[in-house]
Image (cartoon, rainbow, N blue to C red):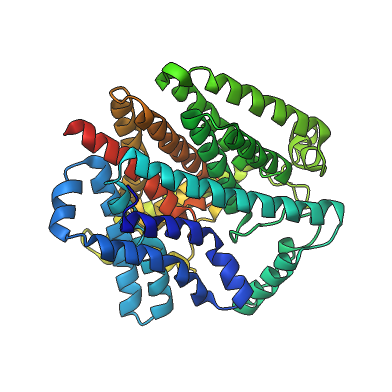
Length: 438
């Protein structure tokens, strides 16, 4: 059944990945709000009541933790609003509070309705992947930036005054349509998982072809964490799909695995843009993590400094008098609104520690606990599910694995095109778990 709220939610997922591109092309930051209108429309059509939310979600760990994180964001946004900064408060509301509607709506959908959303995400991710491929051709072969890269450079300069040469110069990996290179590549990874899930469910080999397109783009783009995390997520998806499949779906996972492995080996050997040599083999042969910087950059010092800074900051805050503002900021952090305003914190090279300063000790435990609650809910539900619903569950879980691994480096999950997808993955698992419990 294609309900009105589902239609609006599909439109929301179809538009949101291109909201930043709309900002760049128009030069108007508020243009991104267009992407959130379908979500508002979906919530208005559905007419959700607070009592329904309270009765349904707060009695389940996964639902309760989702609403805790959203409430934390809402309080942060309200505090910024009261201070008079309407622009930042509006960003918090749209980017980090309103997407809870995705969780509320999607948790009620049947597996057939969820597959429609999977297809929308798969298609949009492929568009992002093809645009990334186009940028790679221009940067590595033609040695010139694309039209969008130049506009993006000008847009960032007009908004922040920063002249970021990595947005367009050859030698840097292009950022793609989603504002940040890690966000673009992780979104492509989500698309690869979506196409694989559709293939495993329906057996359409064209879907497998599009999955390999996403795989090729991930390899040639040179973003190591996105590639490794996507590989792990694919292994998780195929392994669990193998355990769940029956009847005419047996054997599809073998075909998918062989196609992905052969494609990956060919791309690595051919290395059409030289990115394998520059960004992958450079680590194995010379230990160089980033050839673009003259000063060696390695993960261990970054991780150690981030942990040291975060623990020292939280310890100093908790050392204040109980019930003081500083003590509560140690427990619940400075909030996502303050982060958007540029409050000093851990850099996002090890994003898990940024969560600690942003959400505080208890808040970070709750945020990370979301992923553990999803794992527990998935496993208990997966063991009881059958048929199509099990493949859908596996897809949602693989997305959570992918985005969970992203937190080891940059703040991918806190970008406008990714945060709703994360909540959607939680909603799939929560909805299935809720049906099993009933």
